[in-house]
Each structure stands twice: as C-alpha cells, then as structure tokens.
Amino acid sequence: MQTVKVELAERSYNVNIGSGLLGKSGAAFGIQNESSNLIISNETVAPLYLQALKDSVDDSNVHALILPDGERFKTLEYWSQIMDKLVDIRASRDTTLITLGGGVIGDMGGFAAASYMRGIRFIQVPTSLLAQVDASVGGKTGFNHPQGKNLIGAFHQPASVLVDIKTLATLPEREFSAGMAEVIKIAAIRDADFLHWLESNSANINARNAETLISMIQRSIANKADVVSADEREAGVRALLNFGHSFAHALETMTDYKTYLHGEAVAIGMMVATRLSEQKGLCATGLSDRLGALLQSFGLPLNMPDNAQPGEILELMKLDKKVLAGSHRLILLEAAGMGLIDSNSDDKQIAVAISACKQP
View 1: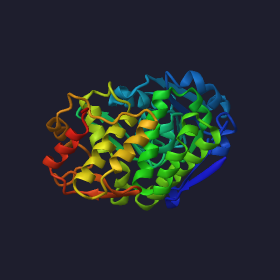
View 2: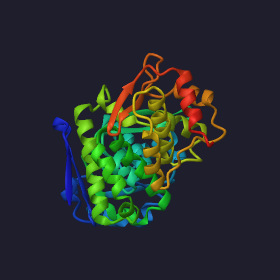
View 3: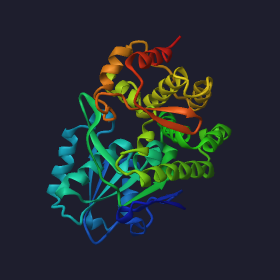
View 4: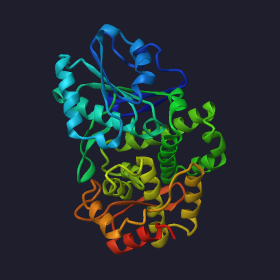
C-alpha cells in the first residue's frame, strides 16, 4: 500500500492506494464502528463491492442507499433522497457517510455530508479511475443544475480516501479511458516528466498492469494533493486543475450529459485549450498534436461534434463557475507540464479554437 497525505492542517487526511484493500478492517482507514455509517453507492457498483465494504464495518451500524448510475441523476432530487435517508436512520453528528462509486457518487455523497447538520464526516471509496485520481481528492462536492454543471456545491474534505485498484478490473474500457483524461490533465499542467512517463507506459496502462497503475495513481494524486494543499478553495493555483473543463462542462450541458462521459468531454476541452494556447503564441506549435496522440492512445475523442456551434458553447461557458467579472478564466499551456491562468482570451479567439477542433 502507498499513502499520499493531503496537508490541510486540522483537515489533513490520507489517501491509501493499493490492491485488495477493500474489505480489510475499515478502522485502519478511518471507518468508525462505534458510530453509525451510511454507505451511498449506485446500481452498478453496489452489487460488486457493497458487501465487501460492509464486511469491514460493524454490520449492525451500517446502512446503505443505492442510487441510479449516471451523471444525469446528479440532481437535487437525489440529494433530497440522501438527506431523507440520513433522517430515517436518525443520523447524528458522529455519523460517517461513505461514498462507494465513481465521481458522481462521491460528489453527491460529499455534498450531502456537507449539508446534513451543517457537516458530518465522510470517507471516499472511489471505484472508477477518474474518481481515484481526481474526484475523490480535494473536497469539491456538488450537484448539477439544468443550466450548468456543479453549480450547487461546497468544499468539504473527506476524512480519508481508500483507493483499491482491484475495482478497476470490472471497469468498462470506455470508463477507464475517461479516467485517463484526468491523469493526462494533471501531467499536462504541472509535470512534464510524468507526461513523458505516460507516453512511454501507455501499453502497460492499457493492459491494467497492477504495479503500473499503482505508480500512475500515486503520482497523479501526489500532484493534485500538492495543489490542493497550496490552495484549498481555488483562490489561485488550484484553478490550473480546470484545464479543459470550461469547454468540457459546456459540452456536457449542451448534450444533456447523454453523449460524453466526463473524461471524454475533458479530453476534447483540453484539445480546444491547447489549440487556443498555440493560436495565441503561448506555447510552441505541435503541442496539441503531441497531446492528441497521447489522448488517442487511450481511445479518447479529440474533436468537437459537428453540431457544436461556437456561439452556443460560448453562451454556456458564461454560466461556468470559473467566469470572473464577466471574463473567461481559462487554463492554457505555456509548454508541456506548464499550465497558466488566462483571463484575456476574447470570444472570437475562443470561437476559432473551438472551430479548429471540429472534424476536418
């Protein structure tokens, strides 16, 4: 097992990474048997891993709520169901809420934990690659609004995170690829050596070699932990983690979360952002080709759909949380491994970059 510590003073916590960790003593990972626990999972993950997690805690003190699987269910209707369940089990301030699933379940459960009694303890047990390397670390929680992604939410740090790579064995190929977008993102904005490592190890990663996956996940989380520790509430450097996301969120909203997995939309968004970086002379020409080749090696899409009109994408981007004083705050690249925060790209420049990422 490897452990990465997210340093946040009294809110610091450990991310434990290994193979076969699920089902071992929950107490070792911060699950408290002496108080009640509520596990939130979904209809896909629960049949596979819920019993193993329940076996690690005192069964008399654990309850479960199984929700539908998918981004389109990340709405306040389902937040209300979680809150109703907490009330039904007479949850108190010493109750622990445990999220078992991908990024959607983690976001939903985390926001419920932040909301109930003004905040109760929660633990993340991410089962998708995207959740393991990104969504489960950093304390961002929330729900979608019909007009924009994650517009409702709170920062609420977990008490601990348990990453068991054995859950990746049952992860569909498309979901695994979507998770790789977030791995590539962190390398692209702050770790050029890691980007090169990903290019050199793509075959082992695609084969889901256990040792390679543990190394990759540990390095991804360590990079993110450094950023979160420096800027917990995204007042500065943490904004770099949004590379590709402004475009991705607009694309997801435009397609009603039915066409793209989040990581797929992020892959397209990163390509738009890198094209814009080249177009503005911020980075050398050719970086988008390099990034595109790496994304393609994991089966990720690179192009905006034919029906994505730049004007529509720009309009949706106005509701993005990263807009400040009416200006887009985009994450662009100076070089491989060097992201920057850009607030002076105008709509015309952005529209050209979006058009450049359509199918030729």
